[in-house]
Image (cartoon, rainbow, N blue to C red; front, side, top):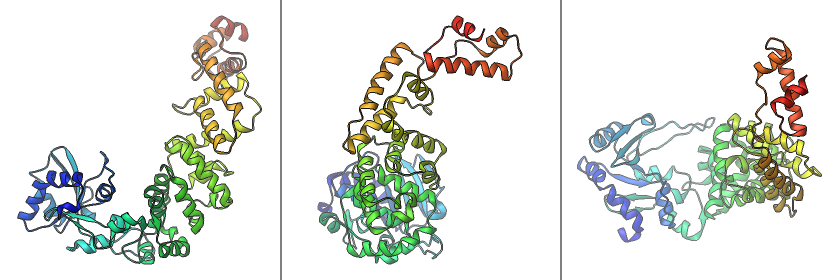
Length: 417
């Protein structure tokens, strides 16, 4: 039966043999589950694949069984049935079989532990994720046809999609991600369910929606997932600010997303570039303040493409105003990438980018201007105590520096004199 498995999966089974034997000796079964099974069957081997297992042992029994095998054990997820451990330097999460019960008004399930691996797999989101490897028999456990769906390129739910999505509405958004990330065509019944159940997203927290949507837009083929959200009407329940755009505008946003750098700020900015209130749209999803700042800054690409040119003064101000570790070059590069998607050559951004290099060579402190005089030196020069007058003088120096370039200390004294 191990012939059904890939060689990398077989190696994982061999690595886990001491754990498997320990559970078997105590009368328990152990199964490898999760993305590692799906990805290995697809021929995708990732170094960062999580190693998750499920068992009929209780959390207390799991802790007892791994305690002397493990280098470390952590139990933060114990109330949800999960015990984490590190064995021979490899991290594992072992979870008691679950039979979760959801309330209509909440996405958070009431966790009930079970003893049946089939029931545990049935409660998972999609058939391609509802597969396990029996570590004792070295065989694939696939009661819902996940491997056949992988081969056929189909995305289905183990239970009826109306039941699955009602239990956990976030799965509708996950469907868009799996459609885009694995090129799996959603089952027609699934599409109908998403079209009719969008309002169910109201019970899902903004943070979970944000995290799932971010996983989608970081994909190489993100546009396919965004198109599914548009076609089913789910987008209106996920990012209302985008839902007011025309489908052609959403398609353009999807192409922009795929064209820019693969990082969260660039992808969010590309997605939201046509939204009137970028900060407000993103804040509704409760991200970090730094992400909001970075995305809003990159969304200034709209200003870049409307400008006829960028003067040295404008470049200096923009360079000094770049948030965090960002540089103004990044904004111009982003604008060039966006323009290319729209069928334009952003000559203004290219010209400004070249000028940035020239200015930075002549003005090494372009990105972080260093005042030629310290505050105490200004106070002494003006004969005043530190306070508003000194602040005003420092701003005068800064304004002169933006307009005309760096000053020497003597030039600054003359300016203030």
